[in-house]
Amino acid sequence: MQSNSDAQTNVILAELDNKIQFVYEVAFAKRELTGLGANVTPKLEDTIRFELRPPFNISTDEMVKRLAHFRSVGDKKTEYTKLVAMNQKASDNQYLTHWYYPYKGKYHPRLVRSIFNIINVKYGQKVLDPFLGSGTTALESYLFGLDFIGFDISPVCVLVGKVKVTAGEVAGQLPLFKKEAIKSMKQDVLKNAKETKKYAKLVDDDGESVYQDFLGKIDDERITNFYQLAQLIFASDRGRRSRDFEAFEKNIDNMIASASNLAEAEKMLKKDRKLYEGRINKGDARSLKSVRNESVDAIITSPPYSIALNYMFNDRHALEELGVDIVDLSGNVIGVAGKGAQKIKQYEKDMEAAYSEMYRVLKKGHQCVIVVGEAKVDGEQTQTVEDAIKYCESIGFRLKENLPKIIFGLYNTIKDERVLFFEK
Ligand SMILES: C[S@@+](CC[C@H](N)C(=O)[O-])C[C@H]1O[C@@H](n2cnc3c(N)ncnc32)[C@H](O)[C@@H]1O
Image (cartoon, rainbow, N blue to C red; front, side):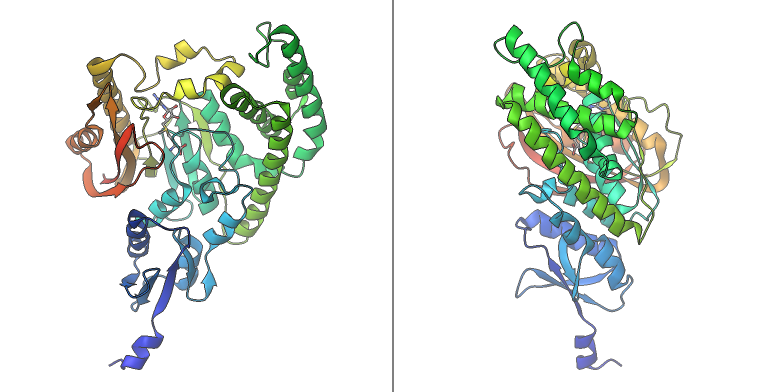
């Protein structure tokens, strides 16, 4: 039998990250530990630590590598704490290249990493996000050593996702193009300023743009994408926030610094495991033709809340810059078409098609995690969460958990957000 003192020495403390402040985050933190098989009790007297006791079904090193909500396990700093410190911005949610492009409606990177642990995905497994958005799941999967496939209907999102993951590989070459990028962008801005008082597009309607010519001369797609994204960030900053040319220069410096941080992170991570660049493509979540039946190990996604947030409107400057026909695109963006009750009906139909596709491509016994919220449309409260559960259960998913999540900054439109864990 174990004596009391043995039991004492066998206890390992896992300490929460000091940015954790919400009760729901503590719930996710605890589930990460149990998801990985740890035998855990909260250490109630100080609230920021959990006691881990034998039997230890997972090694301390493995917890150090995987955990998202903790800054240390025993006396070791977690990998995530080191990654989040590689940050050119103030917020943990913007570390490394996560901040690239001012996208509305992202979920938090830490949440995604904690879900990897809650459902206990293994290195090298294939994760799908059919509603890629700004690519949060893509970058988190990459850093974690997961294979990834992602789709979004918006070409802006596809570009953002790609650059977030690949910028590190070309970090050393990016500064070589900076001078030329700034010079050609300045020429476009000056030309446009002469023609139109207020900023319109950088690429004019004749398709003439010195910056576009500059992009055309780069022969590495990852670098072209990087500088193309810099253009879109600038277009968005100018259009939405009235920023002037200096913002472009400053952003490029910040973007390059973050790309170097990513390169540094890759170096650290590659010592331990293989990193997968993944596949990010334009696609429609209602019809994932290129994905085979039962070929995906996990799905982590947050569907459009376009009924509350009009993505097309938020991204219009960037979409115009890419020459996208916004009316045409909107026809396929879930949640945008129609008005009032008709709009909600169409949204439900489209989401049912998307959930059916998720079910089809997921392997049996594996999990699909959906972050979804209730919104108000024309003053009416929707039942998105309830509808999602009902439909998913009707096609064969089993709801394992339904966890509440607090939503920040969108209190007026999205009232309640849930993280739904379904098993096939
Ligand atoms: C809530 S956002 C995803 C946000 C993402 N989790 C992030 O952290 O950035 C939903 C996304 O779904 C995309 N979308 C809308 N309709 C779509 C469709 N039919 N197929 C694929 N993506 C679609 C939108 O363009 C938007 O980027």
